[in-house]
Amino acid sequence: MARLGYNIAASTVWEILHAADIEPAPRQAGPTWRQFLTAQAHAIIACDFLVVETIMLKRLYVLIFIEHGTRKLHLAGVTAHPTGAWTVQQARNLVMDLGDRIAGLRFVIHDRDPLFTSAFRELFTAEGLRIVTTLPGRRG
Image (cartoon, rainbow, N blue to C red):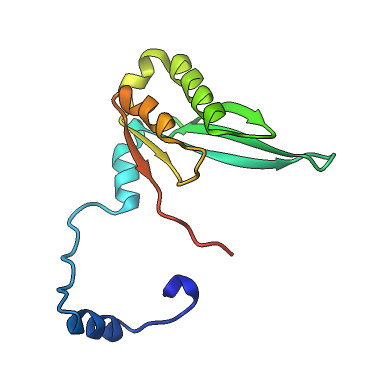
């Protein structure tokens, strides 16, 4: 409801949960997102698409990967029409370019873009990496 622009008091949420006989969830004991990134920076590679508008008003999509520990940026590819298959091929190229260094990585972080297909995720899990998807962000 908050994402739809409605303000809801904590007491209202408690009343709804209580009326439905739902106990509040226990506090999570795990680290915050910032703590996780700081502690695991050396083992994280993240990826996302950037959109570039050319002078001829053509839209290009740029797939980038960044190694959090070294902040090394990998330009995976640029295309006007990205597809899931294209994204998987760029990921394969990255894995080959990383070579033995991929063994030092543990996590791949990406958003919920449909271009990050199951084949994309399977490529990294086959290399022993765990996929972490980010929560949907607020727009506007």
